[in-house]
Length: 560
Image (cartoon, rainbow, N blue to C red; front, side):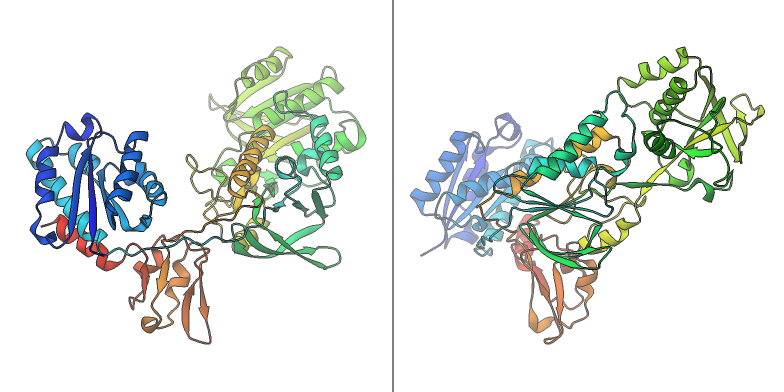
């Protein structure tokens, strides 16, 4: 069958038609001599991406039995998928189609209408020449496992587990300690706008009683291989060393945070014998013995709260510490009427609308707030410089500090196991903070809670729900998954076995075959980013649908 190429020019309302000469484009493209041996069907349309426009394209493909399709329209970022889906409803393989951007790259940036039209014609010629060198690609359907592994039994992990567990989906929840709830389980109460301790206890009970949730305590991830829908997992029990093999389709990392050790800082010198406590230690004390005391067992008559401990060294604000210390002050004011409390801070972080009123309530209770330039601690003695530059020294009975939240030590090992990048701060790096939060560059692995950075309890719950929502839409029980088809491929005859591609593959999609001495692409994992293609010194790698020949033909015509 001879080639029949459909070229459809979208007017995009006035966006394109008002800036280029559509009639001249149709006339010149219809009479291209270099394509005289092909059958060209060239037509305009007011709005190809509209419901009517898509129906028009579908009919054109079917009625004309097109072998190739070129849509001269807008950015592929906006509507490449739109036209691919139109092709899927017809006999035309969607990879025998290409989109040419004559809106952003011609109409919108070239003020002269004649020049814009000339450029549009060049680009469309390039699209025609390219599409003739494209080859049909075929999607493969893979069986998928809807079950989910959640690492971390804190508030984020518990929330995600309850969102996901159900009749058609099992959840495997692993916690490296023996207690569910994470650090929040040590709290006596939460901040006013952050759920409450009863909610945490109820969540723990619900998780423990849910028949679709299997809990592994004192357990950590030992090994994981695979991709979205098909992960093979090995868990290791910390106490016995026993291992458990699991299959799951997705993973959520919700392994929490640690606190910086203030004693590692030059200006904080104290020992376990001094009455210096972190805010978390105060919570533990209150939870275990029901009251806050000095190490001697006596009640404190004065206390100092020190904010931002280690913030400069960490390089970021931990967000929750300011209100957290205010909550701790509330404990002291309730238990020790008349106690003198001074709050030493460089800045106050109050991100939520409720926070200002919360802060003001403590000023009304007589707390002293002092903004400082610097502060040093030696035992219970505090030296600080206020904003006026005056040096002061105090020695309260009790000192309560708010160390920076930092990434857990396990992040590095989990990063290596899952091929997920770490941020320079040590927390997990999400795919994109705005357009793809809680996702990672490894499809099927998500992050939630303080594993992705400092956050409060309510934020951790929202992130867990977001991660759960992504999994619910991507892993539907009974449905197969379709991996990327525009993947990299290795021409075995040219591969020298240098392994450069293994180092640059961001998805861990390439492995080395020792028997054949060549690299091999796992097409189920590859996302077609092209890093390996650009790095291959022997030219053995190429990207399907973006071959050198296809790109050369397009550029050659566009520059004619």
